[in-house]
Image (cartoon, rainbow, N blue to C red):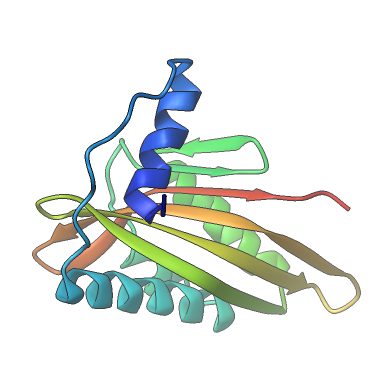
Length: 159
């Protein structure tokens, strides 16, 4: 059996809910245009971190109370909290490097997608460098201006 990102996300969601998995119907491959658009948005997100641009990052998130960003067990809920956390991260770093690998994209329905990838992020403040390596899961939705992040979860291994 082969798994695609949508099938994997379904199993993770079922496991998180504590329900035994049932055989799922095959998931159709995401349309090429959707995959390209979502990958383009994620590349913009990666580049926005590397140039430390709050303005560029802000354009890539929904600005609504339902926005959720989870990192290292901490939840920021809503744009106000997420914006504050992003500004703080960017202000502390003199340099940020983000690497995305093995990116998988699946449609979740009309105008919605999930992306899962291995991610490595290195941040330095000029004296200390912090390296995080783990898995990032992004749920995106299509808005009139393009694709925007509605949920972000980054789990990384501790050394």
